[in-house]
Image (cartoon, rainbow, N blue to C red; front, side, top):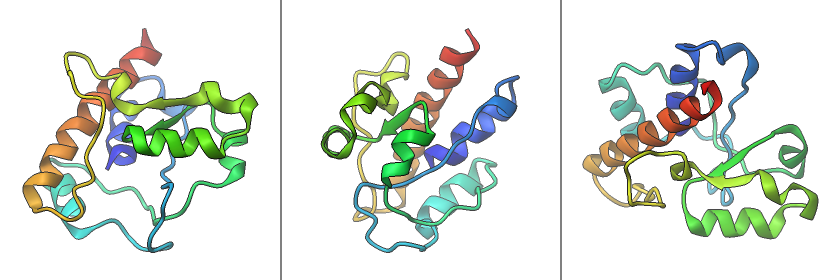
Length: 138
């Protein structure tokens, strides 16, 4: 969800051609699977076109290839810090570090909840992505 939102927001700015977005998990339960149908519905209901993505696990190459790696919550951030080469630790942040006006730092995993949980996660992804794009266009 965060990748789709960030790509769309970046596409509305001069940043789009200079940024590359990808999504990976610290615990890819089902590598190669499409996003949860409830996530697809939440995105579609807000007019987002789902990016062509499948579940995959973070790889060592990601730490070399990307300038910034964003975690959805503190637990994922800790796992990224554990597996990151020491020279790449400065690339790791929480997505909500970029969100303005929020007291929250973690985006919850909505998987075991209902559709409303996915709507809340989308709200948080939008807040983080807006702040991220603003940070890089400022």
